[in-house]
Length: 297
Image (cartoon, rainbow, N blue to C red; front, side, top):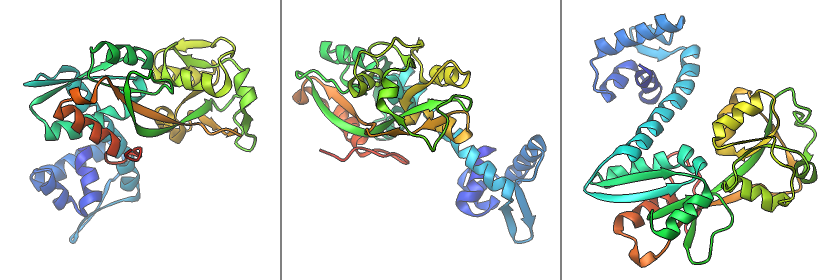
């Protein structure tokens, strides 16, 4: 149903949307009417010249795109965790990259290499480095700024860290930027030791910071803790952007410092990389739909 509604926006009419989805128009019309009854408002403005979206329908399409993107990410990620093929490419990745970037890369890769299994292992950046160094995984993707010299590495993405609070927190004033010193002396809700986000923050403000208010190994769990008022956090913009759009979290401007960071792919020996591994690297570096990849180096 959601894909049919989005198809009206993308293709101009319900009939064109039905054709693109390979669904009979009568079935498409029935599905849309069922969805309208469930939602309680009209999605389409129907006339003898065809069906167009109502204002409510236009807004619903924007929400539906986020849901469908999430479904596609889920499908690609689940396939990477379970799929079996003729050849295997084992990838180790940090949590933020696994949640927000890897599914799109895997989707593109699988379209080109359907015979190759993309086996995914999710861990923090320090563990990814250990697994790549030991040869347990072929490619690693990390957020940490510290990559040991024996490993080969290349930039694949420019990310940005964001300080966030709930609306009741004293920092929730966009007209008053926070200085880095205030960030350095404030206990935060943080990822566990070994995470790339925590390592970057230690490098930015110093590692003699107060102990975390709470340590969690999930970005979404940290966001929920901040929403509940446990305290502020600093996370990737990738991890908080949906919460910022919904107003559940408030971004705190930071003055005087650049919070951009580089996400990297790493491996042990370029000569040992298979053609599939090299192609996956190329996909990660050039990005996919909706992405902001790092320029090729």
